[in-house]
Image (cartoon, rainbow, N blue to C red; front, side, top):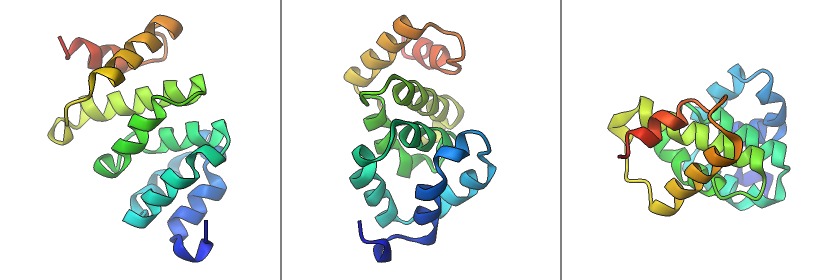
Length: 137
């Protein structure tokens, strides 16, 4: 990645994502300042970042920007790290439940992955995943 191509928002989030799990307020602001190019950068560095970074990034987009973060969350639901998958499922389902005006159909593979996650980890601390799943029937 060429740092000259990234916005200040991306550079800040890249450097501070992991600590944002404990103190997310500033990250919640920065994520709305990401440019379309920054979202491409997020995708390109995803596998190069630690599982904690990926989990944190999935967390800080819980309330958006929804359209921009959706592809990242759909990818994160398929991550190899369980904590990343769990947080991505929570954020994706939260967006789906709380922002119905931004809904798009969720593919069957993603729904199956989320259902399997619930079977694996249970319902505890997984709100709004059960609400999302019940709304699909």
